[in-house]
Amino acid sequence: MSLPATTNVRRRTKTAMPRVALNSLLTLVLACALAACSLGGSVMPETNDHLNNQVLESATNGTALKLSDATDFDWDQAGFVTSGTPAKDIEETFGEPLTKESRYTASPALFVFLKDGKVTKAVRIVPDAFSGADARKKYGRDVVLTPPEGKKGFLSWRE
Image (cartoon, rainbow, N blue to C red):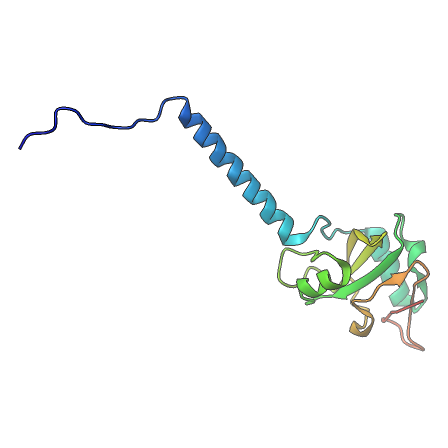
C-alpha cells in the first residue's frame, strides 16, 4: 500500500488562532453578561440598618412609622413582599424579579422602593411584622406603617 505523493492538509495560520480565541472569549463574556441581566434585575436586595431598626422599634412599641421619615433616599412609591414570594410575582408587581432564586427567601420582608416607575432600592427587613394581605401593592410617599388596634408586633401599610 502506498500513500499518495501529495496530501492536501489545511492548516490555520498562526494569526488566525489568537482571533479565534478572542472571539470565543468575547462570546463567553457576552453570554455571561446576558445571563446575569436576566437572573435578578439591576437592583439587588441590600441591608439598611437604620430602616430595619426603625421598623423593629415601631413594631415592638406599637407605634406608627411614616415610611418616608425612616428613609434617606429618593422614592415616590414603595411596597413589600414576604419571604417565599415567587420572583415572577415580584417582577409582575415591581418590574424586576429582585432575586436570582425562584423565590425571595433572604428575609421575612423585602421593601421595594420605586422612583418614576423604576425600582431604585430593595431593602431586606428582618422583623416579621407584616401581613401578606398588604404585600405586592404599591403605596405612595404618605404610607404609614401602623399597628393594628391594640396589637404590638404587627404593622399594616396604610395611606
